[in-house]
Image 1 (cartoon, rainbow, N blue to C red):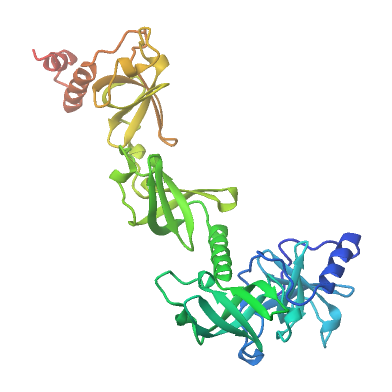
Image 2 (image 1 turned 120 degrees about the vertical axis):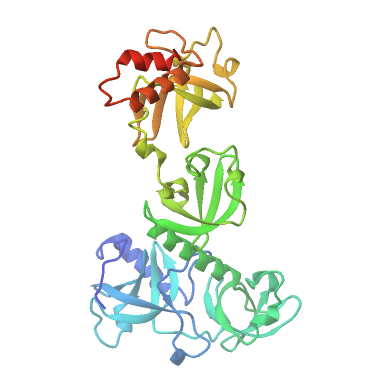
Length: 412
């Protein structure tokens, strides 16, 4: 296996900060990592030769040897350090070994070579990761053995759905986290749920880290809001499809397009805040109506449209299926009104003039005024369309004059 450098390089081996951290790590008792810390995807199940009662074994690659410290990469963004004296043979960069975790401090895990067994209560600490075997179950939870030691797992920490009984775990061996230790009473309480949660979080982080703009993802609608749809995919990753990205012809409400639980495929549009915000698009999987509008919506042309919605700064007008343009308040005769709500209402048919078109950005600017400031009549677009149709029909007919086309347009 070829070695690769840690994602976050360790402190300089001769720095005081590094020596202090390494010293504290080496002096920690076995299995003493901090409660609440996460696993990495680099973990491996214990080898059968390690026995049934060992800590989880992690496969790691030596990436650096500095003095007595051997630095090991266990997985993405997960590094550890171990004393050189624990190796029978001189460790070299690229060597691969099995390790167990002893604790963590200042971003590095303290490691032990191979697997270790728990044999005394003094080795137990809250936050320890242990392999436990379920030996019995009752209404309150599950009885377990950790090596020669007895443990208990409350029903709420089994990680099972409410409808499943704890007895399903009897006879199985799994990783747990120690959440309470009473060495005098020889009582230890563990949780399987915390480990499963961390594993899901790790899987989710791997999914998020692999996301790329333009990637196709598959999932199901988890909830619907007025502003858009939330879709869950992968290992619990949630992305949002804004209402403007559901369909080219904007719906009245997202529920008109999708429903809860529906299976969807969507395109990744953006990944922000380290994956906490994932923007998805549904309409981007369909041919864009904007790709063929340049010839029809030329600047200066008067066309008919339907008022879709009115906002404080103007009104959005649908002029073709899936194509909406904005009439800004400055391109309307407000007649002393603050906005267009007093003049227009959703669903009304009006005539508008094309000002600018940016098909690539899907932006269309419209006006209710002629270039000289006159208000465009509601029927002007219809008359213009009739004239254009007749002109196109007679294009190339040299014997027909422009006058005859005009007369036909006005019904003479």
